[in-house]
Amino acid sequence: MIQSYNFLGTFYLTNKREIDILQKQGKCNMITLWIDTHDISLELLLLKDDVLLDKITKNETLNHSTICIPTLIELLKRNQLDIHDIDDIIVINGPGSFTGVRIGVTIAKTLAYTLNIPIRTTTSLEVLLKDETSKNEEFIGMEEKNGYYVGKVAKNEIADYQYIKRKDFSEWNKTHSIIFPKTIDYEWSSKQIHKKKPISPHSVNPFYVKKIEVEQ
Image (cartoon, rainbow, N blue to C red; front, side):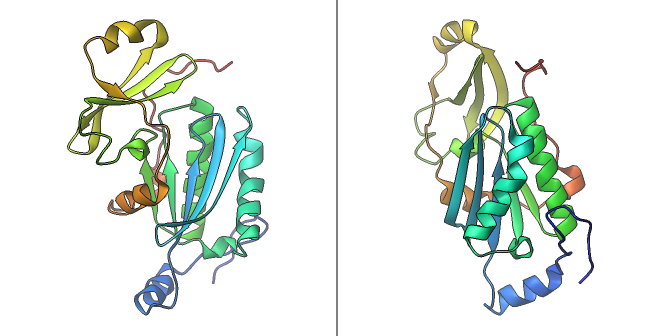
């Protein structure tokens, strides 16, 4: 193994080829780290073969930069796992809080690069989408403090992301059918996300929909 820099204590580059061989032999299971910092709440999850193992949610307003790494250490420790046990990463890259999204994306791509493991992105609206969600609705949405993020549902995918200010939403809603799901099925979402090809950590970037504003 090759020693890397001190990010979470000291950790080492994972030999991905060895992991792939072990998984094919049925000698190890896929541990996925899910990072979501797009909103006020910080959410870190561990999944094993797309089955939820554990989840930590912390409601720290715009304080993700100071609590994300300690929370990750806490999550790993209470599941008797080490940073090297993570096989791949899923990160929500927006839309949402400018600062929150940037922090989550930076941490996710740094871990993926340093551990030499796959990384996949998804959006804060995609994880709300399920087959039954989109049957009768044209748009799917998510509320934030000053307005709504909405996306057009087409063939179980989301396109045409928009940000609609709160003062404009009532008028927009008169001519558009929309649903606001309240919960995420993490296991279902993980399975869908794992159908995507992983991307280079260097290609992982925040996905912003509205113009950047100074956050209060």
